[in-house]
Image: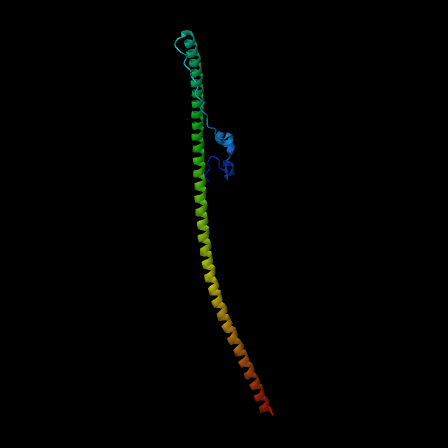
Length: 167
């Protein structure tokens, strides 16, 4: 499940042990530091050296403040990058664990399907053997019925013959 900025999927949607509170990036979300707009520097005319010097000092203080702000934002971005790298490492490890579990599940499923296939084949062989045995027994039962009928007919004929001889 790929996740991108603006995506509706989140790390919380993943199954298993993936928990957003494990990572500060997931818990807080990512923020991109913004660069402040540059200061407008107006150089006064050199006719008034005192005003020129004061303006340059004010501009120098503004530039120092801007440099400090940019330095702080750079350090913040570096910290975010380090946190993102740690987050990527955690996600990589989790993805590898999920992949390993998926492979294990696939192999287990394949073994189960193979075992069930072998059982079905064995049951089909047993069914064929039992059907042949049932057909053989059915034929024997039919012959037994025929022999019984023949015996009854012969018994009746013998009984009639005995009655005829006794008369």
